[in-house]
Length: 636
Image (tube, rainbow, N blue to C red; front, top):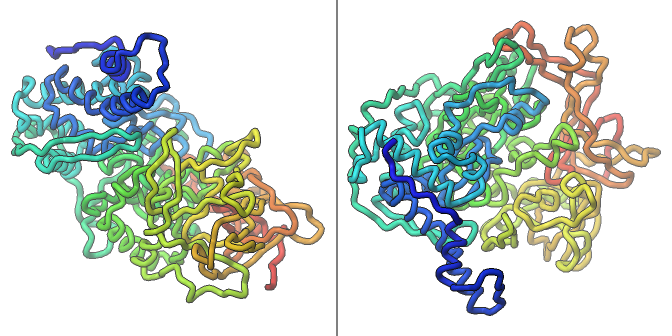
């Protein structure tokens, strides 16, 4: 391809430390001077990686850094996201096992071809390295992004441009989108970043700076790229929102009619399948990366995608249909999914006011249209959705995470989380710290995070900050202690979640949580307001009762339906509620299941209703379901 490609035999950090600190091999210094010098070098590694890769591939450093900034804000993320993006350059690789979690069932990829979106594999091939290197080595990930930009520049400009203005077409191609508005919006944002400059501390403590540079993009360099126009009419959006329609892929991927994606055809609620929830996700990536992903063979989709900077909305699935977004088929059946641009670990950098307002306006519109209650039992986060099996429980996602402001969101919805609707005599407490002043300490990726405003509070085994945090048995199967990790949802309660108070000692409140007694600091009820709801407890005579991740019908309900055993809804018990514990529940719901297993054959789709009824509860940080026949209502 005619590019200069200098390969480095050692990582940038190793070279930098060896040359700048002059530390003999095998010698470990414990001096403060060495620690300070090492910290300084650690803080410059990414900046140096951008400089080296820009020089190696003759990509303007401003273009390379601005592309990375708009993909990741320069934070090093791994591909646990909806879009399978890795590193600061968001190099995408579709991992079949991960992406199939979209439908929340045990499906097989059957060799679906995802080459169109595997930019990580393409970059690895151009560099001649193993793709795993680009996932795990920050310097190599930056080189991967640079070599792709250089390749795209050759394709759009015919040679490697010397003027940053002439890289516009390459940036458009880097977006990966086939749609004009999406691809060019990304390129425009990249050039706006170059014009304004950027400076920030990354999540792993690195200072990265892009100096402002006056560059006017040569938009003609994108003329040769075949792009399509999205539809701005016929969207399911309220007036006043900028909303376009780009349909998610619906396609059969092999000769098998069960191998298809990325959603299921339905006619909710007219087919007897009510829309009950709106689920708040973050993408763990950019809006354009999610659009690209849902347009390809990813086995994942969502109804709506929201842009961080502008609040613009892209609809990808009609509300009547069932996309694969929740990782739990029961919640897919009954929900509408919103994907918000951003990363949970850096929510404050992505969850903008424009995004909150667009999202809230869309929620209100859909809630009214489909009669969805605007409360925290029905407007929920992806992190509150349980798995269908114990193995899946630990693997479920934890977005939108600690930094999503549930209080502000519900204020925008016109349903504030406040004491006026609570009953002090009920014993129910609703978690409600002041988001702005609630700044618990978290860790993430072996790093201590700077405390910032959060919707979460920590839960302890005893009424003391010296006591261990409680732990979830599915996260720590060997019985380990809970952690302050941002993604350790097993010991954290969120704004709007409601529990039964069982004890108070001084400034500490105890609740029934996850089958245990959990304590949190709550002086003068600073972190709670009175709640309301139905209280349930295991029936007398039962030592414990199971908690499920879905309200699926009993097996006898499938008799006469023609649905084979393998295709029936099954939710294994996740936990046990011991006798004597009490939980806050919604009204009983009838069990049901939506059978949708075959591509483009709605005649085989059917809703199965069961005789069993369930209560929905906040069992721990996640929702759960208990059979009505297993519990009794507590009269307080």
